[in-house]
Length: 271
Image 1 (tube, rainbow, N blue to C red):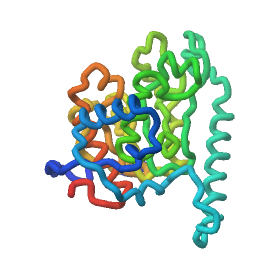
Image 2 (tube, rainbow, N blue to C red):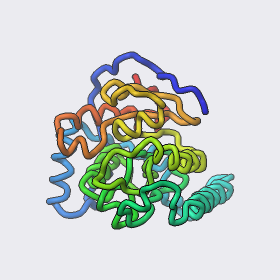
Image 3 (cartoon, helix red, strand yellow):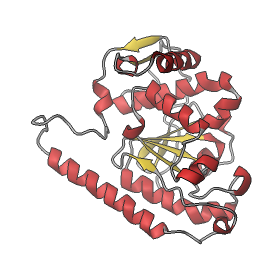
Image 4 (spheres, helix red, strand yellow):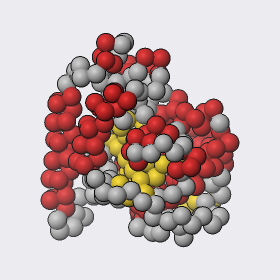
């Protein structure tokens, strides 16, 4: 495992925030939805709109227009298919999993992960909740809806990224996972990361950040910095479920997401 060191400890200087104009394009459905998005951006502290959408194509799950593929595009498509196959193999290896006690404690199904297998951006949460346990997809409840808005706030779509959890089964009562459950399940997350090879990983919440960074520091101390992790840049931030309880911290998450966007663009996140 690669060493995990902060890329920079310099505090970020305030900058005008911006989002991609396509998020608020005329094709965005109903006015009520648009108004809700605009209110969310205001809560995040977004103050401007960028018209340059070129960077959004990085890691996109959508294929390029016919005849526009550059040399080597076919190879990249093959790699993407190989990534999907590799993820499918990991999922098959997990099976209906009886490796830890969670399978006997009310779990409905394994919640593996979802998204673009060739994503540049990956989100890692803690464990499935009730909605996720029923649907078999991570982040589909209220916290998941908020995560989708956060993704859209940096000009991406949910299909552009990959989303997974440290733990693949719901702990009873949504309790914190036990150490033996983490030890049993985290190797599958590491395999997912190694297959996808994201440029940026966002650790959502204290549990995910502590697990990935092997630290006992709270998320309030870990966030605001960029770490090297398994060939990617890792940015810890608050969990969307925490934001539902403490909406005043949305601006902190927006500062973290601006770092994410800068890294995806190849820019210095501290500039």
